[in-house]
Image 1 (cartoon, rainbow, N blue to C red):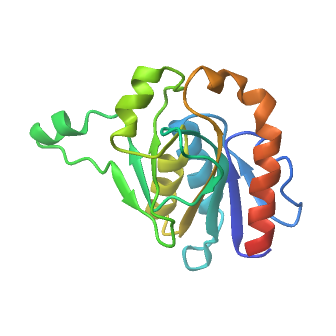
Image 2 (cartoon, helix red, strand yellow):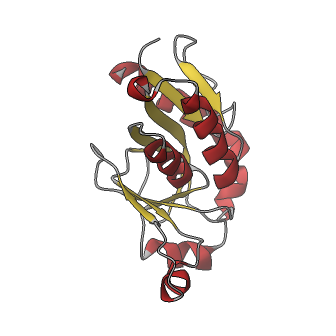
Length: 182
């Protein structure tokens, strides 16, 4: 293998990844993603864990965003961090990722297609998805490096409901990015 573990939430997002890459399909959502990545990384010796490269689609939280992003920061946007901290339970809800492009990815289990929700998230992030933070968190816990690579498929509004029609184009762009670098 090439020292890369490609991770995608759905088969459609990984449809164009060449077979030479070990690929894990997690299913949708933070829990499924964290469990799948942890299980996959547990199969490697701790000193030989691959680089986790999460490829997937994301909603743009600002109208001027489009194309491909490699976020520098991932946030877990749908956890009550402030309340839990005031109750004495520290919560890690922000992860810094090396070699990113400066963008911020907000991850949560809610599918964002409402303009009001999108606009609230836009105050903290550039993109939104449902797995990125969880994948990066699991990789970090397992001692593996991680890169998140996201292609904008919609603008986290009613256009998000057209995701099935747009995912193949994103999958092609993501696979090209992967093969050009690894």
